[in-house]
Image (cartoon, rainbow, N blue to C red; front, side):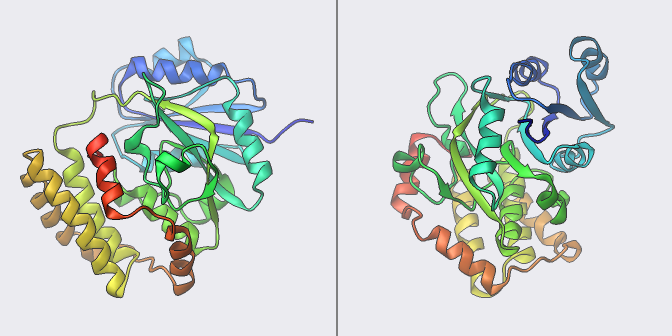
Length: 310
């Protein structure tokens, strides 16, 4: 029996070697029908001509400039599939059977709006700790299914209708925590997000387009925006105190404190332009249920010591 069309949307910015690797991993998939979409965030390196010659099956969404997470929204808008897989250009499928596993996961969880993949280190095959922000200990749960509140933007699959109904990723965030904002809105809408370890991808974690200190700036700014966009009352200040406390500590440790304070400054300046999407009491109850098994602070710090997350 023929399955639903699955659209694979790859967000690309330079990194030609990594892009070829992920394209080949999609081309090797056994699942049909599928379509392959590359959203190029203004690489300016002749990617259109290259894809036309080497990967003619690709539908290219060619953007004039790098618009960050908005590029994923453009890719989903161009997709025709009932299911949309979103991956980055340094993330490739671990086997030729991963799209079939995606289809199986949605069949198994008809109530799920999002399936989050197991992300492995590109070279070792171990769990990629920087991509593990789930409300469970990775030591005990990396191979178990559970409902989560974390969306790995470059390693997830969505029911396209649900993604578009919520408006996709909040584009002013550009990069950093856009998955958290989308997860909050999904949970508030009564949607379900499932971590499904059978679907596996490898993250090569290319450093080519990651400027020094960039994450400290964007994470600091975006945490403030999310605090005022989605949170209210004591939850807002609790979230912001924890996130900024960690970011301030890590930025000083990395010698990037100026990026933290720049993020604070620009975050405050942008508060008036936020599109508010306050989470309801029902949404918070849903989140609290999912978070009830989250590891304590000491265990989370242990994970940071094993592999710094910023």
